[in-house]
Amino acid sequence: MARRVVALLALVLAPLAAYGSEATAGVERFVSRLAAAHLTDVAVEQSFTLYQPDGRSPSSHGEQRIWIKTPRRQRMEQVIEGQHETRLMVEDRVWQRTADGRVAEVPRTDADRQGLYLIMPLGRTAAELLGEWRGLGIHDDVVSSARVGGRELTIIGARPGERDTPAIWLDPEYGVVRFISRQQLPTGEGVVDLALSEHRPVAGGLYFFPYRQEAFVNGKLLVLVIVRSVTVNGGLADALFDPDALRRER
Image 1 (cartoon, rainbow, N blue to C red):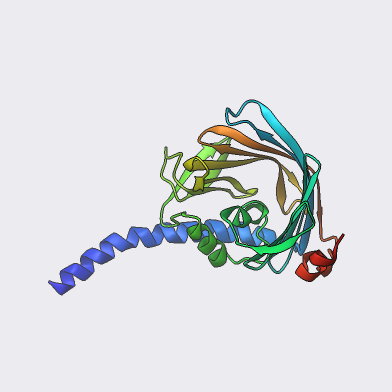
Image 2: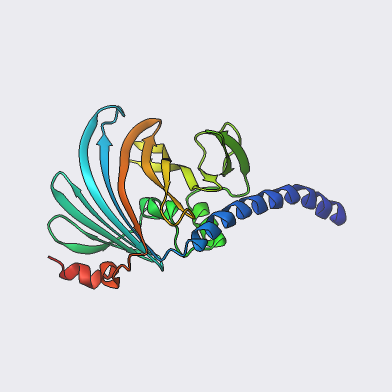
């Protein structure tokens, strides 16, 4: 009986292992392209538009500057309706400088683990990246594929036809082109769908960056981001990512 149970488990787990290997292989290709580009830091300037709940009418506009540097450091400066805010992330800790100049350490949110870290996960291994995605509710033992715009994509976390299940859509050349998650919103749990498009080469043709980014909530457009410029390996100063330096800034 014990041997039969072991044999049955082997039959069940074998395809799951194959799916896991397929997901890992796709992510390893993604990470290797990033590593081949020898990226150590990235600076992005972009504008964004927030939309009303109907997803049709713009409500406000803003500007952002984002810097990423290995290992696992990110700084975002944002101006919206004349109010300036800065958010600094180092490893798993986050500090925020509000419009009134106060600096405080704040809890890390799912939004901090998304954004540019999805697009350009500098210094991550495939295992680390898959681990972070699992933390966002993505099951890497479920893998399928889809052909979109003539390109074959690997979908990690969802089966064919599933559109509201947490998943990463991975292009072999562009990297992440779509990220679907379920998040707790002020109005209750909702489906957040981040679509990345208009990719352009930013590192000698080895790595591409999406110049258009759209976030939908329950199928309605919430945020539209248009990237103006991307600079790689500019030698960003470590002080940009220093919480004490952030407190001293005026």
